[in-house]
Image 1 (tube, rainbow, N blue to C red):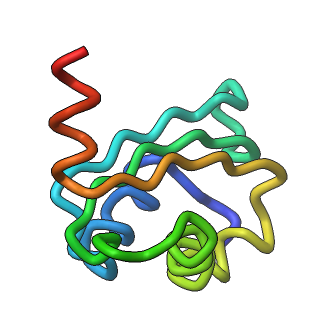
Image 2: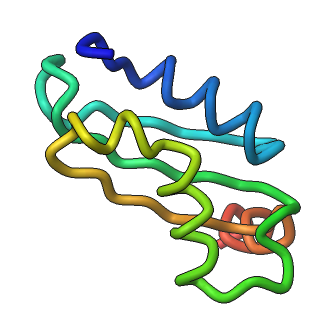
Length: 86
């Protein structure tokens, strides 16, 4: 598990949260210690922000033991579309 990549995290999020869109940025310079994510999924519909973040944290429980910093934006497809039109 020591080799964590943005691509690996994105793949896991897409699979476990049925995410339609995942943007991952490795902000650590390649060492895999700091990531920022935008996650778009229908499973977030009707759920408050805290519950959405808990869903992501549960999905990435093993990775978060190693990652030092992980920031996320969790959006529904509708929120994503609205944000993109700005």
